[in-house]
Length: 174
Image (tube, rainbow, N blue to C red; front, side, top):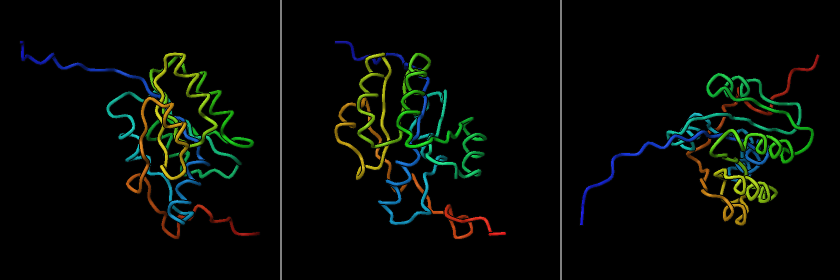
């Protein structure tokens, strides 16, 4: 029997990360009880990519009140974009995922919403690896079972804004 190990293999994958912003924010806020707690993309994205190449990062969020600071940070650090949604992110995220299916090897969906089960099935039938990243306490077990891989988002992956940076701050009334 030959005990030689095979030569090191480098796997090159192109990854798209699609974030259901409202689902992630609600999940983290429910977990922490603090509406000033947010995802820390600077630690989370490298962990999710695990040395794979980032093709696209899109953060979907319901409503027009989207943090300019978040938009700038995602654009500057990851060439990412923030897409406001009329209602939930489910349909816009699903459309973007199907558009990207032929352009990437892996799609990582940041959401624990069971509404994405059929999307995961469809993407996998198209030959795309699908990974889910979410807060375990608010994640559909069926979604996790359908995915090729599951990342637990924990306290290591979020931070709490200081009082001057509150996401709930309103502009002063004129």
